Image 1 (cartoon, rainbow, N blue to C red):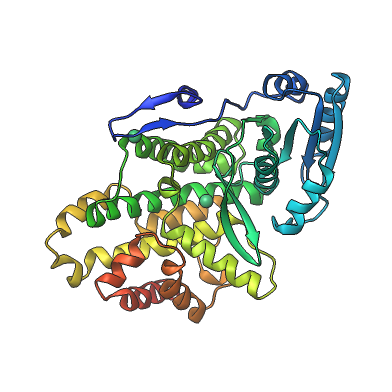
Image 2 (spheres, rainbow, N blue to C red):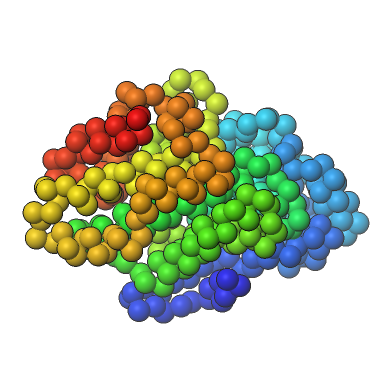
Length: 396
Ligand SMILES: [Zn+2]
Ligand SMILES: [Zn+2]
């Protein structure tokens, strides 16, 4: 797994025809708070640092980082978020920008995904380097180029600079709130259906494909799924697999210069649920937990698709079956993963009733212009039948 380091900050000419470049300079999960000033001096020129922290990280870690930086004579400004469930919206971005200074030389964020996205976006706008200290294995955005923010009430991925470097202390990460571990695991389970959608699109629409990128995502995902029980027990080695898989999935997006390797129809279900919850004024559910539910839905949609007569009568049905079959999990497998990690198997556990489930299957696929199983089912004229099938399977 450590071989991902060879992908950083170097040009790789690939068999896919692209020259890949991941601008991230370093990733290391053997980090300890005592290393912070050395790391800061490697990546940030100057002494003015804006530190962005949340209230979920153990105060002791924040304090150790602050003390270390002060000892090395850094001038710190601290942007501290105390929200229980921080929404990464205009107000949060504004807070960081207001706390920054014209002389800010760099940003260090300490926290989980939301904090990292916000800090990265602000740093992009301020054109300064940004170091992420990851404290939870909660999502795959740490290494992503886009920042996932809420803009005018809707979740959007906005172009931003990638992070300069990512560090984390595995002892801290393994002790993060369990919901964050569940969310990270859910986001990783979703890579199976994301790859299936990409493989489907490759056959049907001749979309770009990179074996190297796919292999990275597939291998790092499989090792997490194989170690699901140990991840649920917070076994340190297995949590390391999880945080590495999450970072790798961000790196894969950089390699492909697209979110395709990490995001398929399961993410569209997640985006739909977030959009609806914002509309209803509800607390936004964790990204990875809705992705886990989306993965379960997609496994049923694929099960329906691959057995339907409309599909089997297509000229390329065998080719598609073979391409997709390598990645798409059976509903039974997804249920096992969710069960091990302690996520609900029934839609009601995600606050989704029968009508809402049907609605999201019919609509979520068209939120973005991306070819997924939704697009293909619609093309074959069987999306409503596939929705009916999935609803009947999930509401027994
Ligand atoms: Zn390639
Ligand atoms: Zn995701």
